[in-house]
Length: 133
Image (cartoon, rainbow, N blue to C red; front, side, top):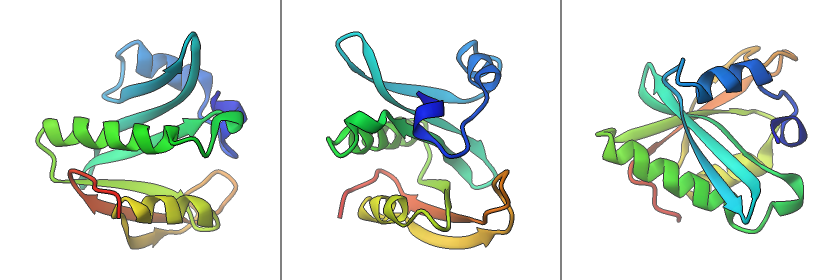
């Protein structure tokens, strides 16, 4: 799924380590019958908690799955005692930025050369629990 959903997919070995419990990341999955339609990964960061990754299979996008995953991550982070959540998004990914803004995320700052291909990341943050605008 990660390879089909991302321009810069996480390595399978990293995801396997996460799922084995070898890292502090928590994963939420969105299932349709026996198919994993999407997932979100939540982890610690300097600012508290971060949406480390979110992915939905391309053929299932625009059906509310990403919104449900984001709401689930919000509830999880809030229940763990966090008051804010942050994320990194490609500066060029306007669609993702608009999606996050709909949930109350605001831009904080740019991290130059954050992605493997050299593209900058925009760090965004929102108050928890998330409430769609």
